[in-house]
Image 1 (cartoon, rainbow, N blue to C red):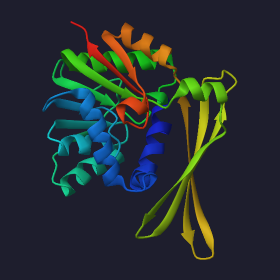
Image 2: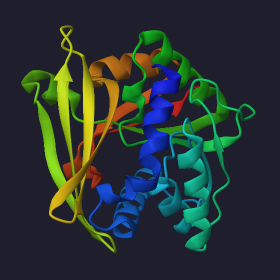
Image 3: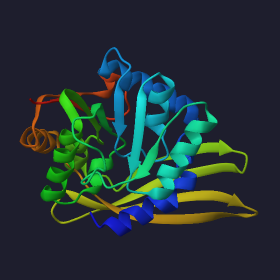
Image 4: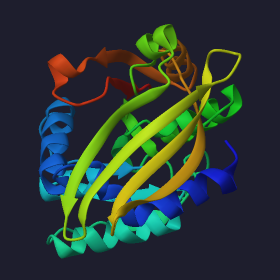
Length: 253
C-alpha cells in the first residue's frame, strides 16, 4: 500500500461515499444486524479499524456496542464521528494506519475490518503487520470480523468492471461504477472509481484511482493463522446476510 495514494483516494471520496448506497441509513442497519449476529450477545467493546465514514461503526454503536473507529483517511474518520453524533450515537474516531494501531494491547473484544479494506494492503508484509496489530489490541479470545470481495471468483473471471450503482439525493441522481485493470500477476488490479452527477445538459464526471490485492480465502486464512488467530471461518452472504464474504476468527491465548 502506498499510504499517501490510498489516503488521498479516501480523503477525496469521503464526502460522497454515502452515495454508493441507495439508502445509507438502511444499509447501516442491515450491516449492523448481520455483523451483530456473528458477534453474539453483547454489548462488546469494538474497534472498527477501517471505519471509513462509519457505515459499520455507526450501525454497531446504535445497536448498543461501545465502538471506537479508526481509518487511514482523517477526512473519513472526522465525518464518521460527526455522522454518529447526528444520529445520537457516540463514536470516537481517529486517523490511524491499521498496521500501526494507536491503542493499548488487549483492550477490545472485537476488531472489525470491513468493506474490502484489507485489499489496499499490497504486500504480504503489510497484510501480516495489520493482522498482527489487530491481534495485539484484542483480548484473549476476542473476535476478528473481516470482510472482502469474493476474490476467489473474481480472480477466476477477472471482470473489467463492477455493476453501476444509482442513488437519489437532494442534488439529483448519482451514478457510481468502477473499471478494473488487472495486473499481469493475476492478483492485483487498478481501480478507476467513477461518479457521474447531472450538470445541466451533460453529466459531470469525477474519477478516483487506487490499487487493490485480490486476496483469496486460502491466502487470508493463512495470514490470519500466522498472526495468532484460531477457529478461522468463512461465512457466505447467503448464510450471514452480509453483502461480502466474512472471515471470523478468535485471538489465540
